[in-house]
Image (cartoon, rainbow, N blue to C red; front, side, top):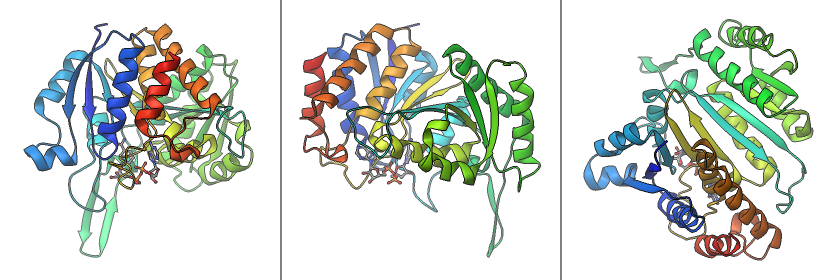
Length: 332
Ligand code: NAI
């Protein structure tokens, strides 16, 4: 695999956290070359394109994208670029690991949940139409093919990582056909992994269980919309959105991004927490076989968080993004 990656600097806090993360990657000796592009709302206003064609061409060459968040207008305007990227490159597996860090105090210790979210279909695909001016249709599509591959990935991951259980999250009591299909496929695939416990739970119950007894969950696999919502919840269990990374994997392409959005409320203030994006970059390094470099960065982050003197405001500190980035570089 080449050492050149594509980088998309998005909106809001995107450019701030991207600068911090690239400096840390360089200081850690990741040995990467970057093809960097501005994308998103700001880029559209400046140059009339949401993603420059050269940016997409770069990703098609490098096959690895480090992408910072992009603003998506609510209720109007252009379609989500995130949804577009996931569909266009069939980045079907969105993997979101939520792991407690002993230095970040939350009501729960020792949470360790890896969510596998199907990334290409379901209501989240945004297939909608106005039937008349007072009625909107949003179409939920669930296919055997897309269900099977994400579920198989979740079990394969559990087997590889020595995990004990995979939980299928659905609403098949109400959506008997679509979610029923997802659940049926889950139990079919589970037969290939007899050593791993397979259970299913209804999504509303899971929302409650997550904030009561999160330790019961290990690997979770779910549809696109439930995964979107529940993974923000799991970020809350470990200290917030500033700490939840993700990878979006497909056949040949891989995109790494923080779970959070462009955080317009803190953009430009220099106080964004770059950790989620940095851990996404660590997932990228691991994907590229640079596991030592990823481990070195993870260790430095753990040390800075454990010391507790340099923390961004979302974690109760007063440090700026740059001060936090510099502290990590000192610990490398
Ligand atoms: P958000 O995730 O941007 O922010 C939610 C809250 O978490 C805010 O209070 C924000 O300040 C805080 N937060 C998020 N990331 C943080 C960080 N790194 N450090 C410290 N605090 C952080 O969600 P919101 O406000 O609902 O969405 C803003 C925009 O982002 C929308 O246009 C939305 O569509 C877009 N979005 C983009 C995503 C992506 O590009 N992958 C994912 C989620 C939302």
